[in-house]
Image: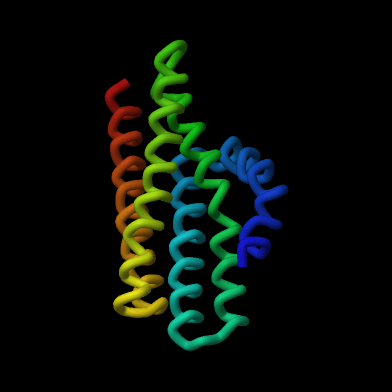
Amino acid sequence: MFSVYSIPNMVLPLIGGILLDVIGIRISLVIFNTLFLIGTMVFAVGVSGESLTVMLVGRLIMGLGGQCVMVAQAAIVSVWFKGKESTFAFGITLAISGFSAVLCGVMLSPITESDGLPTACWVAFICCAASYADSLALCVLDKFADSKD
């Protein structure tokens, strides 16, 4: 499962960086997050239906957007923060990402034990959807900040 997610990400962040330059940060961020959200949903459907093929397709779709989201986040941080501020902002971004991963592991283990793996996957999807909404809000804020300049 991890390989199906990771193999595309050996090359895609480079392509994602080019895409960021060509179509813009906000549109790219929405595209990458949409792919990740769809992949998470497909994976949860696969787990619920006990279909390895659907699970693998979901992980592949997640992989198409996963690390490219990190590239887009770095690009947006580099636009908003300059100089010494940027290193702290990058650090916060990575710390929150790491904290989220730990929280996910801590939160989903008891859910899996009490309610089963499909329920845990759907809870993960809901968390991913909340993150997706946050990224849309970030795009709106970024557009608003551009209009203020």
